[in-house]
Amino acid sequence: MITEKSKPEASPFLDFIPLAVPAIQGNEWRYIKECLDTNWVSSVGPFVDRFESEIAARIGTRFAVATVNGTAALHVALLLAGVKPDDEVLVSTLTFIAPVNAIRYVGAWPVFIDADPDYWQMDPSGVVDFLERGCRWHKGALHNRLTGRRVSAVIPVHILGHPVDLDPILKIARKYNLKMIEDATEGLGATYRGRPLGSIGDLGCFSFNGNKIITTGGGGMLVTSNEEWARKARYLTTQAKDDPTEYVHSEIGYNYRLTNLLAAMGCAQLEQLEAFVTAKQHIASRYAEGLQGLPGISLMKEASWASSSWWLYTVLVDRASFGTDSRQLMHSLNSKKIQTRPLWQPIHLSGAHRGRSAKIMPIAEKLYQQALSLPCSAGLGEKEQNRVIEEVRTIAAGATPEEAPPCN
Ligand SMILES: *Cc1c(COP(=O)(O)O)cnc(C)c1O
Image (cartoon, rainbow, N blue to C red; front, side, top):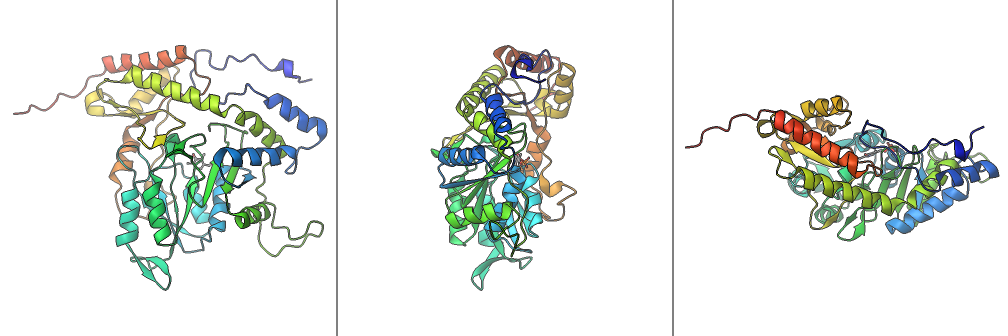
C-alpha cells in the first residue's frame, strides 16, 4: 500500500542537476488524499472552485476558469475574443509554440513579431509598426494591407517570466479594437508596473505543466474580469451543455476542464508560490553575481517596470568572445551532469508555421543561436548553484576566444 510515509525522501538532485523539476513539499499529499477519501476526483469538486477563486484573487481578475492545460486556455481565449477563421493574430515569434498552434486551432493566422534586444520579449515597436503601416482601417475593422485579412487580436507572450512592455501594445490594441490575450503561462507571480501578469489584457492564460512556476502535472487557467466570457468559458470547456439535466447542445464544445484531483495539487502549490518566486529570484541573483564579467556571457536583465518571476534563468553565449557557442556549452555542461537548454526555434522559422512571414527577425534569430537556460528549480540549493557557476567558469577558461581583429 502506498502511504504518505512511503514517499521517498526528498533528495531530488544527487549529482545530476536537472533544468527544472517541481518542488512538492506542501499540502499536495493531504489535499489529493482528501479527493480520494471523499470521491471528488473528476472535473467538478471543491478544489476546482477553490483553485479558481484563489488564482483570481492572486491575479486580481474577477474570474478564473480552470482548464486541462495552458494550450486549451489559449484556444478558448481566442474563441472568447471573437477571433474568426481567416483572421490574423499578432504573436511573439520567440515563444514556446503553443499560442501559435492555438491561433491555427481557430482557423486564424499568426503574424509574427520580433523580440526586443534588451528583455527578449515581444517588441512593442514591431506591433505598432505593423498595425500603423502594414494595416488599414476598412469597414469598421483593421485589415492587413498585404493579405486583406482582418486583424482581430494580439497575444504578447511573457517569456521566461519577464513581462512584455504592455502599455504601448494595449494602447494601440484599444485604438484599433483588437483584443489582447496575455500568454502569462511562464509569468505567474511576475508583475508589470506593479500589476500581476494575466490581469492587464482582456484575457490571460496560465499553465501548470510540470516545469512551470507551480504545477498540477498538467493544467491551465483562463482569467478575465468579463463575466459573460467567464460564463462562456465554463460552457465551452464542458462540451457546451445547454441544460443541467438534458444533453442538448447548441454549440460545439470541448472537454477542457481540470479535474478536482489536479486542482487539489494546484491549491497546495499555490500556497507556495511566493516561496517559489523568492527562490527563483535568489537563484537569478546568485547566477548574475557568479557569472558577471565573464567574457562572452550576457546576463538576463530585468526592466525598470518589471518584476520577473525568473522562470528560467537564461544567458547569452557569444561564440567569438566566449570561445564556444551555446550548444557546445550545453554539451559540455551535460557531460558534467548539468542539464541546460536552448530557447525555442523562433516560430516563423518552424516547419509547422513557416511561410507566414517573409521577414527575417534578427533579434529572435540571434537569441535562438545564443541563449542557454541554466538549472533553476525552486529547490536548487546554493551548492548546486555554485557547481553550475564553477563549471561554466571552468569551460570558459578552457575555451579559446577568437582573436580580436586588430584595430587601427
Ligand atoms: C507552457 C506554455 C504554454 C502551454 O502550456 P501547456 O499547459 O503545456 O499546454 C503556452 N505558452 C507558453 C509560452 C508556455 O511556456
